[in-house]
Amino acid sequence: MTTDAISGRGAGPWAAIAAFAALLLALAVAAFVFAPPARSQGDPAARYTGVASCAGSTCHGRMEGDGSVVRQDELMKWQEPSTPGGAHSRAWAVLGNNRSQFIARNLGIGDPAKAQMCLGCHSTAGTARAVPAEDGVGCESCHGPAGGWLASHYAGVGTNANPDAEMRGKHLANLSAGLKKLEDPVVRAGVCVDCHFGSASDGQFVTHRIMAAGHPRIAFELDLFSSLQAHHQEDADYGWRKFGAAGARTDHVQMWAVGQATAIERSLALFQSRRGTEGMFPEFYFLDCHSCHRRIFDQAKPVRTGVDNPGRQIPEGMPPYNDENLIMLAAAARLAAPALADQLAARTAAFHKAMATDRASAVAAAAQLSQTVAALKSAFAARSFSGTDAFAMVDAISAKAIGDRFTDYSGSQQAVMGVDTLLNAMVSSGRVTVGAAAGIRGDIDRAYAAVKDPNAYKPAEFQASLGSAVRAIRALR
Image 1 (tube, one colour):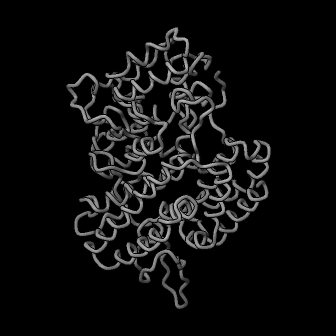
Image 2 (image 1 turned 30 degrees about the horizontal axis):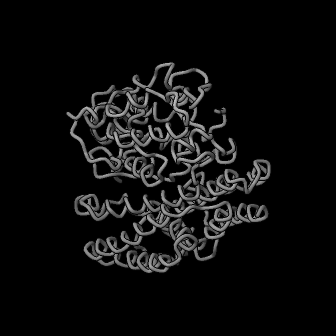
Image 3 (image 1 turned 90 degrees about the vertical axis):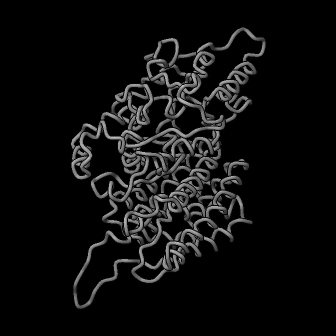
């Protein structure tokens, strides 16, 4: 029932972005509390048991993925030293490398392997949990503290005449005991975004100051990052356990759309909080990096380095809010929730305009925009997407109204990750064969190459590369 195939993505097509995403994965992840009420650390159900509790050969510690229900080599995949799939296990170890030491010296925080500023995301132990810090981002960072559900999870399936129903029942019971429902895109996005985008918790917000010290820029795309970390196989057993139906699978288009909404929802929430300022300045984390980080020329006939963006009606020279996820959200809204699309456009424009007024106006506009984003996230979560929808979403991303907004590196990076995710969804749904998808990987590669180096980003060249990939995908419709 299990196979060695873990991800539907090709190995070569997105190598440039996979390397970037792998670095982000190595540098961040954290926990998010699922539906059960918050528990104190004294509650046995809130107890973290550590990676070792999952590592037995009868559990997830086998050397080969030959288990009868699940692979059972998940720990080995988690520990893989050279692939993105092992990034979480390396998260604490990277704090000892030269780059981390350089960042720590710049920040004056001492040993990064002991600094809460780093441990909040680089280790499950980062919030004073009784597990070894050197485990890095362990199983429970994503699946939740196992104290309440480990025994039931380990017990396995008995001899019930309907084992599929029994597996489903056990899974639901484990969810009630604190296991996180990661098959739900809203829950999964909440788990990942705390570190891969930021949270209000101590040690889970990569400020502009931290990035200036040398930390990578933060970016987030839920479905891509999920694929890089997929240690399981979505077979019939998985469908029964997670969704209650044989053959049920992750909806990759839904996962992508919910991830985009969650990222901007979190960004706007942090912007409205005390995190929105840094001393007398705004917190520059929220602004588009490359609107300021451009070469400066002093010459008689200056060359304009910026490009007009129709989505940002702001004065010349005003640094814009980083709207990379808003651009993708605008594309998704036109397909999945057209009634909210116009409201999103209007409130996005109002927010950008308010950013040029004062903080009070910007915070008020952010609150209005957040309401629309939350409504869109709910609409995406309640809607299933088909392979046909994936084609329509590619069209939406490449439409002129959206494509004209790819004037900056970050938004363009999101666009190519989105198109790659949607192509993968077409393959997963059976709308496109693996061979046909492989035939257009060269176009995807060229689009990735256009965003490989943020310092060499050229909007016109990127739009041409993405257009070529989109035309190749359309030909498969």
